Image (cartoon, rainbow, N blue to C red; front, side):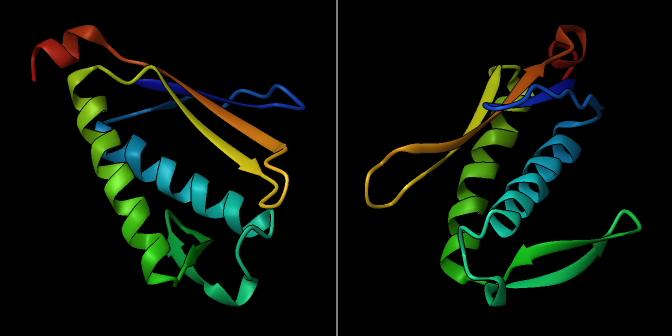
Length: 117
């Protein structure tokens, strides 16, 4: 399976190939990184974690992590069954609901791998 990521303001592509577990873990770190870098949650709510030889910022907020775990568990299930085509993260202004950023992750699934389990 491979994935491409695009932001609303600029188009850039990242290709990631791997199992549903690896791709869903990438989604988790991508979302955590976006939330940290964009200041959606206070920086003191994040801690550094070393993964894949690099330091990543991950939330220490239990309610956020529980929510992300639920969403990403479903995401993994959809990846494994070949049902996920796109994952979108939208950052909006809490007061006006204006869209500030939109991140689109396009997913391509190898149908032969999905059919083979």
